[in-house]
Amino acid sequence: MVTTADIKRGIAIVFKNEPHLVVEFQHVNPGKGSAFVRTRLKGLRSGKVVEHTYKSGEAIEMVDLERKKVQYLYSTPTEYTFMDNTSYEQFSISPDVLGEYIKYLKEGIELQLLTDAGVPVTVDFPKKVTLKVTNSPPGVRGDTANSVTKEAIMENGLAVRVPMFIKEGENIIINTDSGDYVERAGEQK
Image 1 (cartoon, one colour):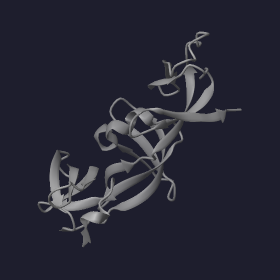
Image 2: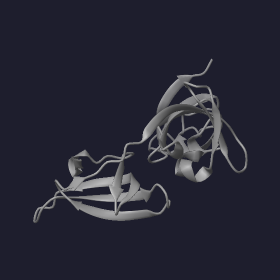
Image 3: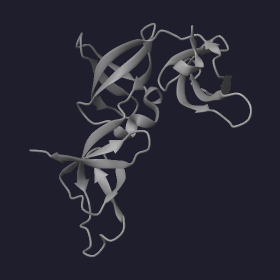
Image 4: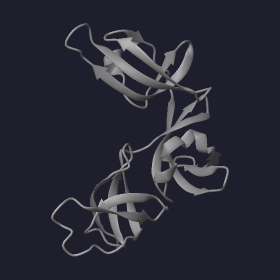
C-alpha cells in the first residue's frame, strides 16, 4: 500500500477492484479546505479513461507491472512490431496500447513496455525524443525580432512548430507530453 503522495504518471493502481494506469495527476492544495490529488486513470482491461479525486494521504493499492526494455522495429496498418532487448523475441501490439505516442515512434527507438501477466498494457515513453527534420521551409530574413515559428516535418511524418533558424537535416528534441520543440540535438553525421 502507498499513499497519494506516491502517485505519478505511468504507475498502475487498483481503482474499483480493477487495475488502472495513472495517465495524468495533479496535487492540489487549496487555500481553504484539505489538499487532494486529481487523477485521470485508464482501465488496463477496459481501456476507458475515468477521472477520480483522492484525499491527500489516502491509501491506495499499487499493481505490480512487469517492465521490459523493447526496441521498435516496424509497423503494418494494424499493428506495431517490437523486439524484446533481452530475449530478442519479436512481438506485435495494437495501436491502442501505444495511444497518443504513436506519432513519436521512429525505427530503432528503445522504450519500456509494461505488461500485466504477459499481456502488453502500455508503453512508458521517454519525456523527450530526438527526430530529424526532413522538410522545413527556409526562414525569412528579418523574422528574428519576435519568437516566430514555422512548421517542420520530421523523419516519421510528424509536423512540429520550430523556430525560424531550424533547417532541413538537423536533429531536434521534442517534448512527448506537449509535442513542442525543446532544442537542437546536434548534426547527424
